[in-house]
Structure formats: structure tokens, C-alpha cells
Image 1 (cartoon, rainbow, N blue to C red):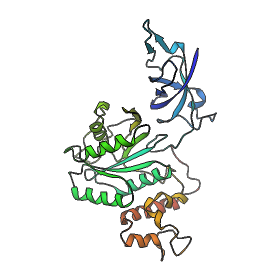
Image 2: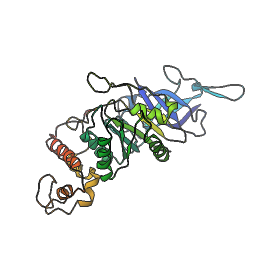
Image 3: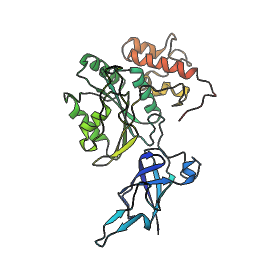
Length: 336
């Protein structure tokens, strides 16, 4: 007998996908099983409910058969999963996506926690702002998490002011001292049920350590900063979602230090202004209808920067993104 159900991809390595099967009335409801995708999906062929190759976070259709599980004399069901995947099972379709990111490569994100450190490594506001713009474009709720606040409390406070002014939830904390962990833990447990969240940010800021502090049962790897080069080692080697007690999924992603707008098409140039949340109250108030908000006289956004209503660093990031996106050639192709 064939069974058809749905599930969420938690991990994908070498064409083998770990699927969190939905809690329905099929025999393997609630199991986490591994299986491969059918040929059309492996090649990215567009079929019904198929938009691309499977990504971590995708909600997918799964089929399996009686050979995929055993039932003991007392009625207990056991999946016949092994290193090659569940016998008689396959991912046969990708359900419509809410969104899909290139970096980190995740689908159907609801929440993005953008992490930086107050020091070691030094915070990079432009990277934070690029991630925030990507989140805005894809309709993902974002929060800024300032880690290692004990290393440079003044810089942590400065970053907190910038992003609170921009309209984002901001958390300043330290896994070493425990400062701010309880507040952030309360927040994440409140907003994550039934949703998918991811951590993103430069290598070495402490994402894995923070996740472990909040959800110790996940037992994620943690790495130290290389003193020689002051950059983080990539302690997390793959994108993976972890089911969270109470519902929802949390992602830990490979560290990265650059959101490359030149070689990756995160969003079109025309959408840039709309991805700056703090610009919104001033749009339409400029002297010129075609104002680029870069240097024009009578620009309401430039005036808001002068008045301290928009952080200068946020506008600087906008100018940098503006130049990169404006100068991209139409034949530039996104690289996945």
C-alpha cells in the first residue's frame, strides 16, 4: 500500500533529505525519516507543486509504502530507515514556498535573528543592514542580536540604539556572563511556536553557543575564535532545522562574513528603498518625485538623517547598496 503525506525538510546532504513527517493519520506520522527526491526534483524540473530543487525548510509531499516500516506485535510502528534512506519512500513534490533565501539557503522562513558581536569579530553594520533588507524584501520578521556584549559594552549600546531607532527588536547579551540570555530566551519562545526561524551573521559571533544556551538539548557544536586571524572558524558545516519543543523549527546555518550583492540576486535595485524600514515614514515627502535619497536637496530622508531620526550608519549602508545594485549589469545572473 502507498501512503501520501507531507513534511518539512530538516536537512539535506548528498541528495538525502531528513523529513519531519506531519502529524496526520498515516503510519509514520510524527517520525523524522530520510529519503531521496524523485528524478524530476533532483533535476529541478518544474512539475505541479515544484518550484526548484528541494531546500532545507521546504514543505514537501512524501510517499512511502508498507516496506517503509514495521509493526510489532504490540502495535508499535518502527521506521525502516537506514543510511540509504527509507525503503519505498521519496520526496515527490515541493509545496508552494513563502520565500527562499540564497544565503543562508533556506525556504519558508518566518523569523531571522541577525547576530553580530560587540567585538571579536568587530561588528559590521553594512552586513547587518544587508541582511535586514533581505528579510524585509522576503517578508521575514527580523530581530538584531548583539552577542559578546561584555567585550565592548559601549559599542553594544550604540548598536542597540541604531536598530531600535530603525524599528527592530534588539537584544544585547553575553553567553559568558549570562547577561540578557533570559530576556532573549523568553522572546524567542514566545514568537517561534509554529514558525521557522534562522540565525544568520558573521562567523564567530557565537550563534551556535547562543542556541545551545537557550536550547541545551540541541547540543550544537561551538567553536572558538582564531586569535591569529580574528575570524570565526566555520563550526557549523551544514544548514539544518531543529524541531523545538512546543512547535516550530530553529535553524543553525554555516557562518559567513559577506552578503555579496554583486554576484547574488537577493532583490532588484528598484526594491532597495522599500527594504529600509526606517525610510518608510519619509517616502513621498521629498522635493523631487524621482529622488534617489543619495544627495538631492530637499530629500526628506537626508533631512531625517541630519535630525537624528534615521541613523547615519543606516543611510551609509543604503548608499553602499545603492551603488552596487545600480551598477549591476542586466546580464548578471544569480549564483546559487
